[in-house]
Image (spheres, helix red, strand yellow):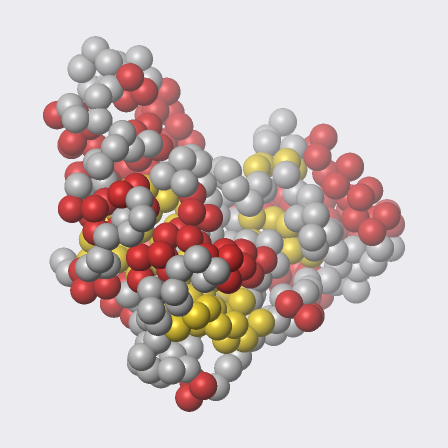
Length: 363
C-alpha cells in the first residue's frame, strides 16, 4: 500500500533526500563519522553549512546584501526576536490573516509590556475565521514604523498572499514557513524573511532567517542567542547549531535545484493544488472555506463535507487506505491536504478518486 503523508509539518520529505541521508548516516563522504556526531567546527560541517547557504541563495536569488542565518527555536521564537531586535522605540504593524499571524502579534503585545515599542494590529480576518486575507489602507501606516509583519501562507486556514500589499514604504517582515521555495517571491521586496524548516525545507529544528544588512540591529539585545547581529557575525555558529537539520536542508536545497528550482516547484504545486480545487469546485458535497479564490494556498488545501460527522467518517476511512494526516487542524475541523514540494501529484489523483467514492456512498 502506498502511503501519502498530508501532514502540515513536520511534513513529507523527498524520497531521494531520505535515501541519501540513509546512505550517509554511518559515514559521511568517507569521513568515518555520521553528521549526527560531527563537530560543527569541522571542515566537513563547514562545507555542509556553506553549501546549504550558497544553494539557497541561488534558488531564491538572494542578493549579496542579505545575510542567511540558520537558527534554533522554530519560527515561533522569531515572534519575539523580531521586535526585540528591530522595533525598540518604534511602531510595528501586524497583518493578521491566520492563527500564526495572530500568535506573532500576541507575542509582540506581550513583549511590549517590558520593551519600549508599540505593536499595532493593522488588519485581521479573525471574525470570519480567517477565510480571506484582510485588506487595509496603506496611508494608515506611519512611514517611520519599524516594519509591517505578515504571513505569506496560512498553514491552518489555507490562504496565501502572493501579491504584496502597499505598506507606505515601511519594510516588510514575512513569516514564509509554509510556502518558502514553493512559490516565487522577490527577496528584495522584504527586509526580512523567516521560515521554520519542517514544511518545505527539512526536519524540525532549524529556522532559516534571511535579513538585509541595513536591517540588522545596531544595539545589543538582552541575550546574545536572541541577537541577530551576533548570530550574523558568527555565521550561525555562535553556539552549536542544529547540525543534522541543516544537513538535511542542504540535501533538500540540492533536490529542489535538480528538479528545476523554485519556478518549477511553483508550476508543479499550482498544478497539484489546481486538480484538488477544481474537483472541490464542481462538487456539491465538498467545499473549501477560503472565501476568495485568489487567496487560496497552493501548499495547504482545507475542505469539508456537509457535516462534522461525515468529516470524521472521511478521516476514519481514508487513514487505513494510506491517506495519512488528512485530518484538518482542530481549530478549523474537516480535512486538510498539505501539498508541499515533495508531495507527489499521484497522491492528489488518488485522494480525488477516494473523495469521489466517498461522495457517491454518502451523498
